[in-house]
Amino acid sequence: MTPTITAFERSPDRGRGLARDMRVRWALEEVGRPYDVRLLSFGEMKEPAHLELHPFGQIPTYEEGDLALFESGAIILHIAEHHAGLLPKDVNARARAIAWMFASLSTVEAPIVERSMATLLERDKTWYAERLAMLDERVCVRLGQLSSRLGRADWLDDVFSAGDLMMVTVLRRLNGSGLLEKFPSLSPT
Ligand code: GTB
Image (tube, rainbow, N blue to C red; front, side, top):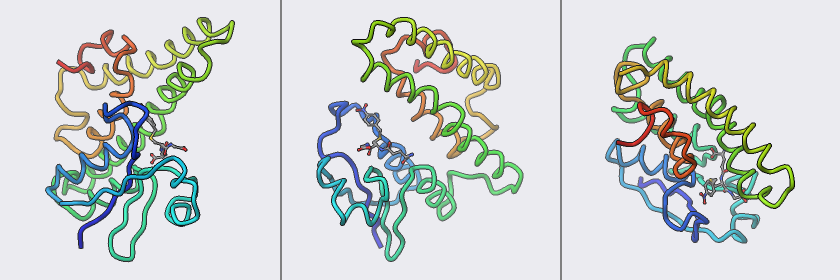
């Protein structure tokens, strides 16, 4: 059965692939699983039919047979558990890869999202510059820690995993901020 995911009909990023369906698309492409995409308007995302799939009226969702999932992390974990290539077979290495998935979403993505929301919604406030400096600092603390751990390695834990996939999609949200460039090992070459 071909899974169906949902994505923005018109993404505010105008096609740069920064919305969270991109990580699900990457996971499906990585494991070679064909998929369909249902594009939704902002209005459709808040209608009962979509709220049935996603209680918060967001994208992405994932439908496969009688399974419906929301939350990009849960979707990618599901894909990774059912296909080779995104999680190591060794039990401990697998647990560490899953830890990196959680770290990317809860420890790294959170300050990045807070910063990007500020740049979208608070630009006209008198205190914007001061707040942005504080949010930049919080993001840079995490980038510094991540960069220290990564060192000169290609992957977060020995071999490529869903943890790397997730972390890359989280870091891409900083493109254009000038922050990633301070940490060459985390910047695109
Ligand atoms: N925790 C959820 C997950 O990981 O799946 C978060 C899902 C989420 O935030 N979805 C966003 C959404 O549906 C799209 S990705 N928002 C609409 C709403 O809440 O009404 C966030 C996003 C949106 C746009 C850009 N962009 O244009 O650059 C980047 C990221």
